[in-house]
Structure formats: C-alpha cells, structure tokens
Image (cartoon, rainbow, N blue to C red; front, side):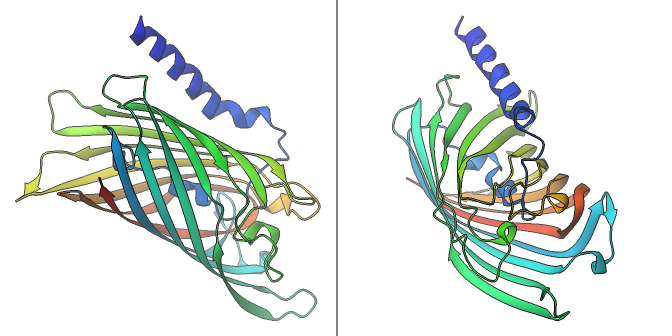
Length: 312
C-alpha cells in the first residue's frame, strides 16, 4: 500500500511539474538568462541520511551569441551584445528527520552587460554586483524508506536588486517577484552494474511582482548517470553524464520585451565528482545541443559549474 501511495503521489507531482506551465497564459514567460538551470543537478545535492551539508557554488555564463528561433542570427538584430555573469551561491541543507528538512540558497551575482545606447548608436558596457533572489525550500523524503525520493517546495524572494538604472528588466540581477518553487528528485541504482542514476525537476512560478514586469514561468529537468565504483585511496571519483532540459515562457508587462523572451533548450553536461571524508567537489560543463528562442536573444556556448560541499 505504501509503495502504491508513493507511486501515485510521484505520478501526479510529475504531471504538475511538467504541465503547470500550460496552466498560465502564454504571455507569461522568461528572461534572457535562464539561470534556473543551475538549480537542478546531481545526486550529491540531496541528503540520503539525517544531518546537514553546506556548500558554495560558482557558475559562469557568457551570453555573447545572438540567436533567433533554432539558428544563429546577425548581431545587428539585437541591441544587446553581451551578458557575462559570475554566479556565487552559498547554500545550506539540513534534514531534521528522515522525512523532513529544509534548504536555503543565498546567491550573489557579478554581471557585465553590453548594449546599444538608445538613440545614440554607441555601445556601452555596464557592470553591476549585487545579492540575488533568496530561495527557501522545505524537503520531504517520506516517499521512500531510504530517502531516495524527495519533494522540494518553497519560495524565491525578491531580495535581489531589480532597479539598477542601466539594466533592462530581464537582465536585472533580481526579478522583483515572489515565486513558488516545486521540485521532485529520485536517486536509483542500475541493476547488475556499477552505475547509478538520478532525476531532478524544478518548477518556478512567479506569483507576486512589481508593476510593469512579470518574469516568466520556468521548468528545468535533468536525468543523469554516474559511475560509483572508482576509488583512489580514500577518494571516490565519479564521472557522470547528464541531459538537462529547460523551458521558459515569454515575459509580460509594460517593461517586458515579450517578443524577444522565452525559449526551450537541451544541454549535454559531462562532469566529475570527488568525495573524500566529508568533502565533496563537483564540476561540470553544459553544451547546448538544441535551442529555440522566441525572437532574438543572446545565448551562451557553454555553461560552467563548480560546487564544493561539506557534509556534517
């Protein structure tokens, strides 16, 4: 009975996560960044026993190629020329029991934005460093006895700067919105092998926002495998491969550029993880293999991630 109940809950949560974007108007959508892709990842992001972990993560994305639809587009078709961002995230996760826990993520962004000056024809570059939008989530792992299946839920709060005068609404470090977050993950073993697999999906639905700009709903999901039988001394080395999919809808509001926002994207992301004692070091690089943008948008050729965590 318990397994049947768990399967039923998982099935409907997946339906909700993958389909809730269809419940909002099509005018609701995405900014050019697509930074929610950094919130899905490997099995190392989730606890499988009571206790906690803290981590610091660095992500890098250089959006310097103009794209329209499913192919490259001339840079002359886009007034924005480059969005280069260094993302720093400080996180803490703690499982109070085998069923309930919480997670807090505090981001800090350093962003460089190059764009045409309206009416002047000159290109200017502007830098801005500020705290991003805080994320607070609850964690429930009572769907399986070994904590391998979990649900996350919470809020993204408007703590990031969304009023910097030299940035557009969709390139601000903060969105100015309060978002509902819902996620689901599962960790599993591949029978008769030394390989394990994992899946993780996250949905982001803006609810409250400031006048003039409504950022878009977003869905990010990852499926991956990793090798779990390679050790050098006391250090476990786990090479892995992932497929990450993202979909965002177009922005809306008087300050939004709806015709040039919203996209779908698929990344192939090889990576490697080192575990020794209580320390974990993880790195990957994401390569887009499919991208479709609404209108002209800047894209990145690669996405980089480095995560250093400590379990306690």
